[in-house]
Length: 135
Image 1: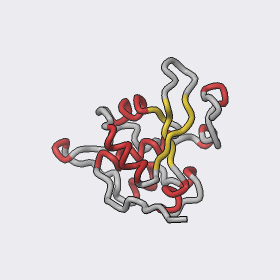
Image 2 (image 1 turned 45 degrees about the horizontal axis):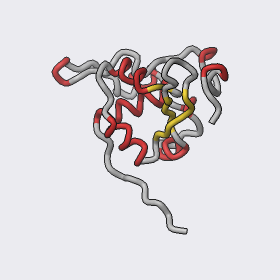
Image 3 (image 1 turned 60 degrees about the vertical axis):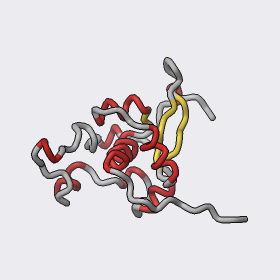
Image 4 (image 1 turned 30 degrees about the vertical axis):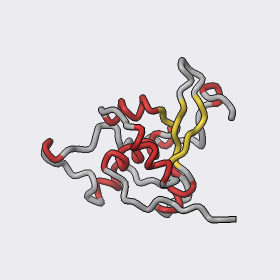
């Protein structure tokens, strides 16, 4: 059996922001990603993340239009040395590492809500069963 090559390109800024939204808000729909980032998500951005095998399509929401959701993969967790998405750094850790310093608007700023600091009781292992269709 031939091993499939994994895309090793450096993700674009849009892909990196989209990946952060997916990682911190998963399972998340394209519309939710766009709302958090404040800009439209191009098909190429999601394609790049899927080609890198860091993101996959999750279950469909059982809401109007049955939108697909996006979630991070085991490859994403392995690449970043995480056991689970719960191990992602929180807002305090990101600020301490200097990754969320304020920059002038001309250089861009992190979108509000991009890296939420969830309350411990809000973190769970999965979505509510009534919102998703089984695959």
